[in-house]
Image 1 (cartoon, rainbow, N blue to C red):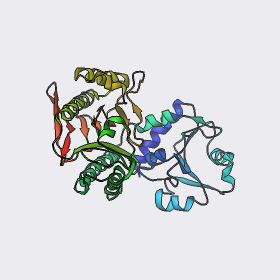
Image 2: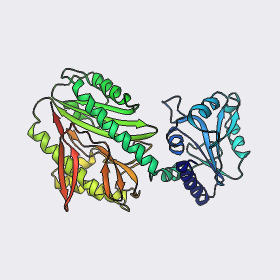
Image 3: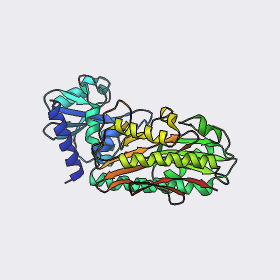
Image 4: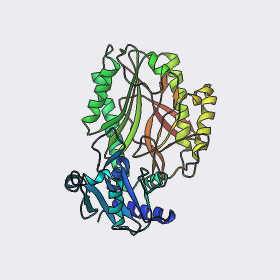
Length: 368
């Protein structure tokens, strides 16, 4: 028996009862990966939707609804017929959404929910997302391996770096090193020199790196996504940049320290805002979000002054405080023992922050 699948099915059943629904249809690539423990229905990666639906009825029975093009591969390479009973439809008929609804109605009564607002269903993605938030033991293990491999991959980028390379060249190196671990970078950002200060989301350009470099990656494998950022200097780190990075690390540590079960996301926002002010950079909170919960999305939610999301134990977070010209970002998991970073890279220096006797480590700037 697949205990992970059974546990997730039970979560969905409880959610369906709470929403008075007879079943839920999952079509997005992130929800397909979540329920199946890392399988994929992705064909066209420019779309959030995938090929084929997973349908879970309130009685716990599971189905896969797909056209005759996709069903053979899904059953052969992605999921098991023993775990998801197949309902196949002709690809010509699939164009009419009613074909999928009729297929689901043939095995379950009542109203249905969906993650994409499918016709004749209720959009309940927020309720589905809540089912994803707490990692199962199997997910925890997969996430830790992903984080470790992603951190190592960015570490492996270092020997391949040379001043004079363009941001686009460096982005290709980053994607290549991640791919060596069977990791797909869903976000790859690279900024050289003044572009670090100019843009919080620096899509790689042809600009050539001379002095300072920022690399950002959101690394996906088996559906899970780990986010991390690294700063590199050609030569000594300027004193002002070091000061800003240490201040950024202090904000990061305050977020780590406050990431405890029951904390509300708006409280985390205020903690970050206060930390920026304490470090002398009070306006930086207004220049970028600070990150938040993650898992099968780059962020499931971000800390916001009006948000009411609640932190759970066994939930993953990627905090990304930034101060103009620098940034700190790691992914970690809140455990019963506290917040544990999973994406650290050994080759990078660290910045130690101590809060009430507790030590928190953030990545520093690597000098080449």
